[in-house]
Image (cartoon, rainbow, N blue to C red; front, side, top):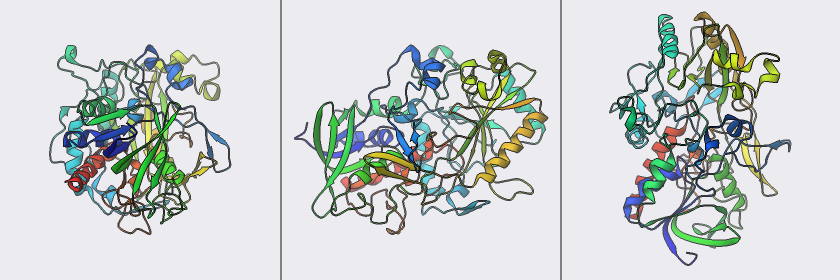
Length: 513
């Protein structure tokens, strides 16, 4: 293997790298896919709340540091399929306006050089590839679409349907979350998904999620021209003397250090690790990190303003699969606040073990089973803005993540508004903070929505990548994950990462021809 030269090397198998491998596999080109992790084990612990959330069984044990040097234990894992192995499967298109310059209360969300129309065909392909279930025409903010969702929406269970109807009666516009869940509600016997209560944030024991492993990597590796090497950590990229091309990829595989080479190298390690890899690959021609003449590698890190709340009511909520409804009525603001606020969606149903993460803080002496039986659980997302001082750096070989919250007024207003709405429909007699990711407002460890560290653009002094996501400085080096984002919008980033991987795959195929 070490003597082989490939046409393409892809580093990472998540939403970006896994999708790209799928796109390129039928080309016949010799492709090497390198994944730092192994296949996530299918085991009973996949559905064990204590193992998944309390003991963080599927998160990395590596330690990062914040700007002050304090330890960070990141909520991320290294597996074939990346973090899609534990995602909730919510795959949203961005709104058309998300690609434009938007004024927020806390600053400016910059315009993208490509617009919604450039991504729309790829959004459509991405929804088919990841088997998205949904229904168009219900969300007043939804963008135009050339086709209906490829599969029908996932229905609400009775208690959620009651809440849906109550929200509609208040003049709001609840809609079905577009979900990459392999649920066949017409013939459940043929359904991979069993509609369980351990989906959102859990690995799926029955492969009921459409994730990057199941839907992309496994089909890609069925081609003889595609080789997947797992537990292969890429240490650095080496360049030619001119610095204009990557000549080898240095990999730690077991106890061996091996170098692989290819005509094209694609980094898709996630926004944080992709930036860290480029910074670790500094050399004489690239003294500040590979492809970093702009000094933008690692900068403008974004992860959203995210939080979770639990509404406790007198009425019990026997819902099993809860993550079916979302609301965007406050996405662009409300009367009296002409700035974006954000997005609301249901969480997977919490149980007593999830609640126990926060019990000492908010419920001493309360029966956790009683709380869980009466809860309805919500996830709120608002946009954080690109700030060059929010950045990834590497210190003594370790990742350092510097991040200061910004644009928090929109999130805080959304939290207050949604709390009031829940109480008005008897869905929040008591509102408690929930910390699936440690507390009400997700701290720096919560990097599930990471993006922005290698932004794309037309100006090489202001961006790392060109519009094809090839680095300005290195001719055969691409970055295909959330790194390329110029802003973060206020919905989950995964579908945009997938759509972009399909788009960049087409550009790479054109180049290889």
